[in-house]
Amino acid sequence: MAEFTQAARVLSVNDLTPHTRQLVLRPTVQNIVFQPGQWVSLKLPVGAAPPLNRAYSMAAPGTPSGELTVIFDRVPGGVGSNYLYTLKPGDVLHLSGPYGNFTLPQQLDRDLFFVARYTGLVPIRCMLKQLYAQLQTGTILLIAVAPAEDEVLFHQELLTLAATHPRFRYLPFVAAEGEQQGVDLACSMLRPLIEKAPKVIPMLCGTKGFVRPLRAYLAEAGYDRKEVKIETYD
Image (cartoon, rainbow, N blue to C red; front, side, top):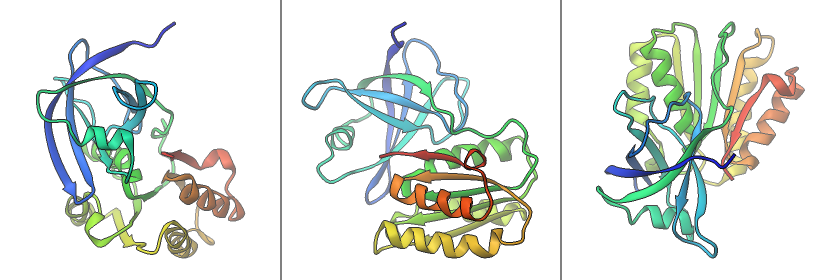
């Protein structure tokens, strides 16, 4: 069966950091019902063989009126992201979905442990919004890695969440020297948190070069691969 594709209108455009932008879209045919952590496929009229399919996770839970919030960074030379940067309110693009299995477990019987690099924070932010809207009270730790000081996504929002909910810990840091530095810093922060401690539910999101070494590190610490939920965006 062919996937259902529909038009969506751009409602708003907002720059979050010097290199990331938020679009709020509303599908024009039917609302998309999704779980936090899932993504939609945007069908962009660019590239050598249009449409160019690009996956973007939702940054906020669904609304009764059907708005979808997606966030992306502008990739140097990136055909898709540079096209998205031309969009303005009122423009129309096409999308399908939702897709993806990077979603919260049905039973949260252990503490949640999120690690995200840059825009890998987007689906996790969506999960956090749902968890706290539903008054979930378990312990949640978020390690967020950014490529630069001015590229830390949702920083004030997450600081406020940590101040409001004592069982939420937010640990942001900058890895300006690149992906490997981010891996090294994340591993150094993980070590005291998982050694000789009860197992948590690890959820990792970022580039393959960031996520896979962290999953391997957790495997060395005694986690089965299936216990570590991952999402990559490259």
